[in-house]
Image (tube, rainbow, N blue to C red; front, side, top):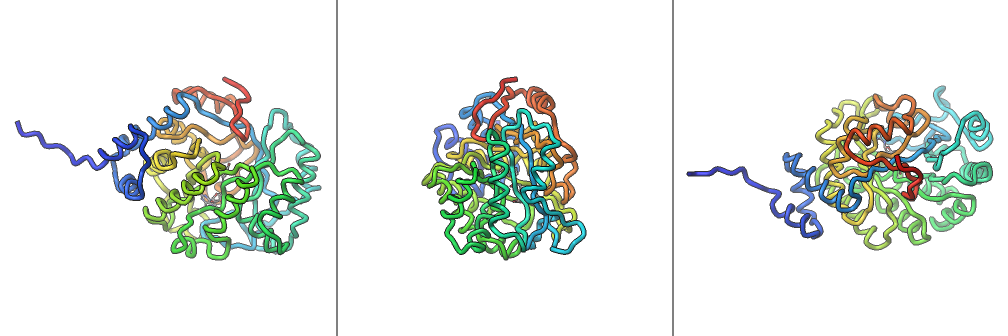
Length: 366
Ligand code: V47
């Protein structure tokens, strides 16, 4: 009997995943071009379970956005405002500490601090914030300033990346978050965020941090003007740096939210798209230990499914309203989720919830 089979474009990749062979640039493109979502997810799940079994992590963290006033005008950003805009706010050290004194921070393991690059703030304002937070909360890890901010501090001070990071570390900085990476490819980057640091500079900041023994995170913003080639190139550059330093803890694909941005004509990525990006991230970045499904951008529902599509981490409770994605139309970011809500979400997805700290040490088993 004649048997007609659908062409199996993923056969070679399947073989590589099972033997643990590294995927090539072309494999990455083939994955993005394939519509075989379930097979891509199944392969990513093989890798995810090989690395982490049934474990799924989340953290109890507090978000701080010291200012939304920013001198950069990234086309994808709905959070920033210009100086003089009535929506602008400023929370330097004193104001931040005053506001935090009203909050129950028991059990919080991390402050995640990012925001605008304020045209009038000197390096001392940013340094002071880290110093004062560290003095007031010495037990809470400070994960602060993206590579974009670190690069801006080098311009403000006229000093090197290493000098800036040393000063920050002396003040209490623990590690760097992964924001600001967007897409490294200049052809795309120049159309979405021309004025801030280049992809090469972003990588240089992270490489320097790693060489100093500091761990960092990595991200990739998708669903705007990028091409599959730009995404594979982006992940390849992360993988190359990781081969060199081993300093990335996690990879976080970020789904672009278009509302209120200068790219608002673009559609929002679909759930299938989000799962595919997470799965391809897990398959391609074989040397980065963790892949996060950021529930704020992916929605809690897709994030749950993502735990079987390559992701092993769901970020954290946040405790306060997320600002950057909600400004761009995120629907699931009002308020925060409790630890029990997180644990339940993970249980329902068939995984074992573990509360972690920034460095993935287990704080509590649920
Ligand atoms: O750098 C900005 C992105 C990032 C939009 O390191 C947008 O643990 C979607 O980096 N739609 C900030 N995304 C968030 C981030 C992050 C998140 C979770 C954990 C960690 C970590 C880092 O959000 C920005 C930019 O890439 N972004 N605007 C938007 N309209």
